[in-house]
Image 1: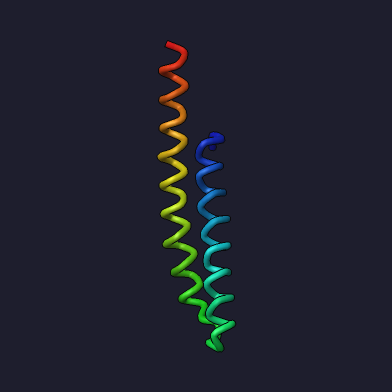
Image 2: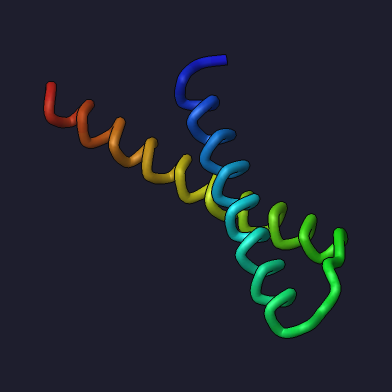
Length: 70
């Protein structure tokens, strides 16, 4: 795997798990029980979104560097 794919995967996993953890913490503070399916949904949905945004930003940055060298 190249470094771009690794950074996309790391970004998606890390941001998805952090977001899902924060949402679970807010649910817990409201007195709700921990629900694994809700945690998985939040982690996968937000993680996928952030991975796509990272991919877009890396692509945009690469295009900008390519145009700068030309």
